[in-house]
Image (cartoon, rainbow, N blue to C red):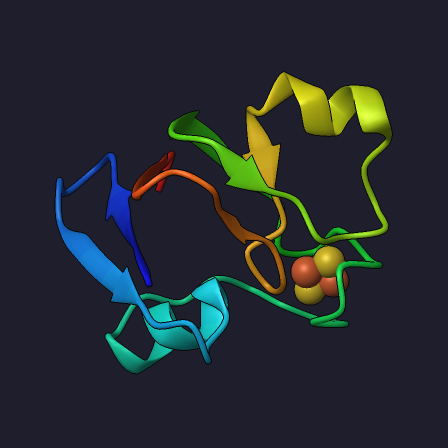
Length: 87
Ligand code: FES
């Protein structure tokens, strides 16, 4: 598990190993618009302010992934303990 924190509220949410970021946030009342939920369409793209992304999408180029400033929360995860999102 890792933690996602929202920059706007400072609130932290636990993302368990068996749930996507969008799923876990949805269950805790935070909605991120999704479509494919497979890392293909880019609908869910969210800016990342802090932490290290574990990119699992097919949408971003390697360069974009390396920039570590946005990710696809429908399928991607975190390598760091905390990910701060621009939400
Ligand atoms: Fe399609 Fe996340 S919903 S990439």
